[in-house]
Image (cartoon, rainbow, N blue to C red):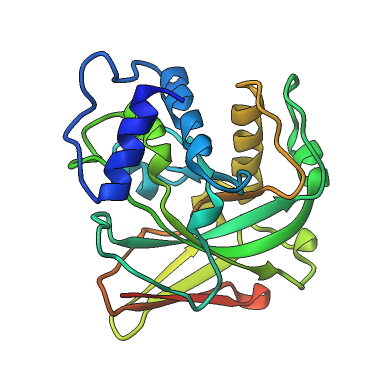
Length: 255
């Protein structure tokens, strides 16, 4: 755990913001950012829940002003069941993102590069998820990828549905449509193609990004692969529901 990890964690708990990290604590590279991020696990009372990917779509990259995907850790304290009511009190991003989530049924040890086939063979279940991200920076579009990685890739709350019962392995996830609605306000369409062209490719990227840092992907961990559409703008009182067709629906309220 670094002083920078502690600083970012304390700011998040207090609901405060930073313009930039102070000189001498600011990560200069992606590796520096991941080293800061790793310290967050020490603050959690539970084992790591899994991993997330930010900026796997052109819309997501534009939203946080980076030129490629970044990985973050999912902490168990921030995981919610479908239908939960999640407060937006200190959230400045105020968006909701429908995403595919994959839970692993076996370990993927560090020390090798994995193919998509190897990654998918290790997946046990598919889950529908809704992410409500946020950042500890006043202007998260201006700080750059290393600082955003240090900020846990904008991870905050995640709603996770049960395992999808439909035979999803025989479905082209890239072409699979997703429609989401902020009740009474906006309906937006997307698909798996928004996620690095295919959620399975995004998942493979995440596995190799993490194992390339010498970290094992563990049995039972969930990985969310990025928003399937332009993020949905939300304000307190909104209800969001995402329809994944044959895979089912998932919803959340924000207060």
